[in-house]
Length: 616
Image (cartoon, rainbow, N blue to C red; front, side):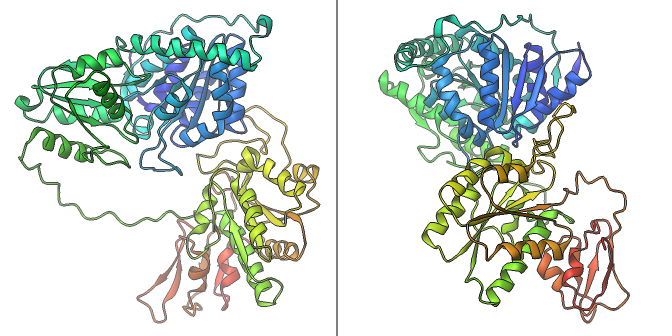
């Protein structure tokens, strides 16, 4: 069938299609997002009948997939590693319940982290939940391994976790396309005398079977093609995931007499392939373990050495030989391998390159969130100056708007996890009840996990102001659809769920809204809610610039030499389209027409009226 140059996530998606997947659900989250999007693209150009959806959150996605798998289908769920936290409740129970078909959870880990709150290791979660985990090292291996994950799930009738990491998800490789595997037609839901109802007595019996299955899996994984043993000698190197690919690349450039007297062990699965690992450890003096995040492989090797009284020194994260956090890099692994081999030859000097420019994350020019934050900030500032309130605390959430914590906005004081802004604001107010507590939440996050927090606030008589930043998309992960847009991931029409109607339905009695690009109206709407008691909500609407298709965007511009150089437009907004030209006296504001979208926010802070154009 030929080769295709594929991103890792694309390879995973095509591997799932090759495996005959019937239902694909998920929630956007970097680095996993493109898996589901690729499936949508591929089925759109063919005649495959597959249900694909962005679900409202990862828990919902897993439960939909669980239903499909219990009805005999092959289901795939996609999410990032912190999304697995949201899905953990049904996943833990589903392993005890089992599936009739197959269910694979693609949970992408994010070493670094690059775009996450945590560096958690999904291999740990798999061991904790007693669920098998497959850990690919490259995009081409991921294409093949996802089929193995489906086969394992179908054989043991249990969910399986597929755990790519960021560099596997987002790197590219030339992948050999293979024929589709034989597809089984789902038989439908069989009530099976109550098999699908998880009572304690059934959980006990199933737990015993799970333990037996894990032993069988570990034995099978010792002959699995994804777990590799090669070489001979007194030294050993064990690695997994992308670190295996890095290690192989580095070893190819190290003196042959060094690494050819060394055993290599690739460990790609949970449960651990004990028999193959014991064969690896046999006759060794020392082992260096190279892996990202937790010392999973390292701990398993230490366990085997202790259990079988093997005098092998295991070096890795626990011994301080490898870093305990962050990504592994080629340079780091080269350094560690040379130290391990006692190679004192200096590495080739790095090229003398100029330093990269510092690029702190910032809201885009024209981002509606900047307008929303400043409207609330100005309204609060006036309320404090007028003695209406003492101070305000701003609880944020997960999304582009988390960047509101940076100067000069300084409008996000807390950010914990999806939906936590609304609930943390309630807790802060219980301790400091003379503070006005704002909770900022995006439209997609509101549907994800914001609604229960609103209900909790109403039910428990909280005093908070919920600010919904409605930019008509799931912007941070690439502008995916959500229930408030009226369109599904495949482009079909859907019921457009009203955030205002939901707020009203759960008992929020003070709801107002404004166009966030109408700065005066947005500021007034925020100011009007400040003295009101109880739970109140402000919905500030304005499209993300990435989805705004209006054609009448004209950049703002400075009128001649009328700028006084006060710099308020820059100091107040922090808009990347604005800067101060320091070579003039006084320093004059400069607007970059290539970046400016004409939102007009800067005009609200120009005392001399020197800015024209843009929105009226």
